[in-house]
Image (cartoon, rainbow, N blue to C red; front, side):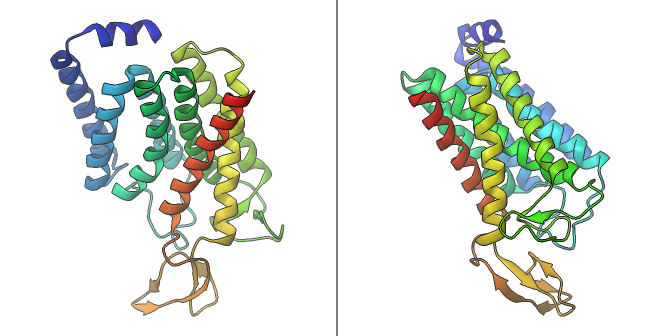
Length: 271
């Protein structure tokens, strides 16, 4: 991929822009037909994907697409048993795409506009690794025969409730993070020393996501006593029982992505 990126950046800006627009059109059509993104989600994905590709090349786009495609496949294969808990459904909207993408742009701008190119790649890859690890751990972890446990109290919690972790989900998240790291090393021809750094930063970010979900993320209680992220159910307001009102799942994803970026920066810069 490094050779392809070199060839890509040797083209004129106009030709590069035309290639990007063509690729984004294909992605938008696929997302619309598979109903993986809302209209707002498609718009934000196209804008971010265009910026990402224009600045960082096809390698960065490949890694970003790995996240979205793997999430789409897993979402189709594994039924969502937690719709009553989660505020949003399976289709990613504008805010969800931004929350999962903005942290990665931190590394991309460092890659493009500073002399810390490798550090920028590692930070970008860590953000994507966290997003993959979080998605895989949640979706695949739901297949566990037993309910997950709270990352804080280690007591059983309902499947799909933020802050719950399981052995199967954690292993799935670790695998997803490692695959992103391996893909990044291959695409960007990085030294193998960055493979464990990206992997560790990704899975730690996913665990940080669970920590925020168990502490600061807002949750409500319905009349029947069950917990949900919905502020209302059947037209009735639910009682807020924990968390900060603005700390929804999108905010948690955003902060977790930046946490992974920070961990990757510290590990790559000082080791």
